[in-house]
Image 1 (cartoon, rainbow, N blue to C red):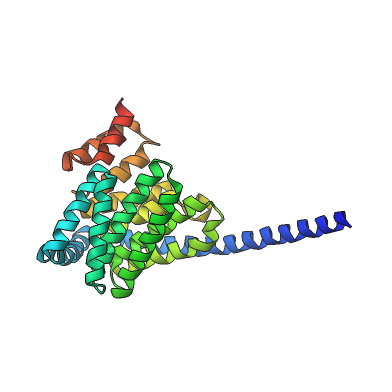
Image 2: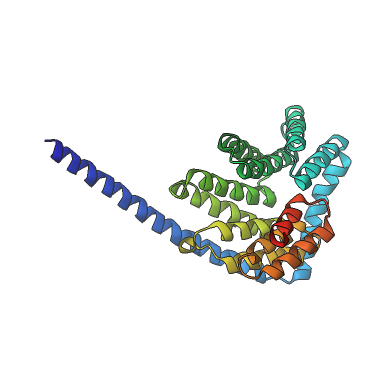
Length: 283
């Protein structure tokens, strides 16, 4: 009797695995097709045209920051925490953005920066193996970006970061989580590119997606490089674009990676991320 029950359990388990694999295969096809569409978005417009559009969008966001003194002060705290990879400053920024959200709950920019601060905390917790804190920040970042999108569905950067955070959730929970979140990642990055492929942040985040997605599901180191290089073409002062590009070249060309990190530090000597990357290769 026990042998028969065990046999039934094994059959059920194998059936479940088969169903998951079939779903994964279907999702793979969808993701690959979406990524192919995204590829064309990188190259079908001249750099000059894309740069003008990006600068226009950036100026609109920058105006919101400059005109709101409280927001400007909070963003400064966030940027300092981001540059220095400083947990205390980032937690201070989170508290400040949460206060702004409570006072003005329909301002999508507040939610956006709250999500950005949580996104950097995710990386800090990941680097120190603090799984519980990382998972909490992932949930809070998703909530913040989703609220920003509900308030402004045309906000490409929020869609783009949402895709990155869903990717963090897969890396936290393991490959099987890809069944639940792979489609969400595809939609988030696809929407961001549709809304504003001229934005270097959108391009970098799309590159991160290519870099972390398994090859069988459409991931590609070469496509990641194309995205990071496109971001730098759009904004030659975009430090994150250089650091991500250097991260890929660490696996291909160490000397080129060193040169890229040095360029990033020329642009922002306070970038602890770029400095740490450079020191790891040169010490």
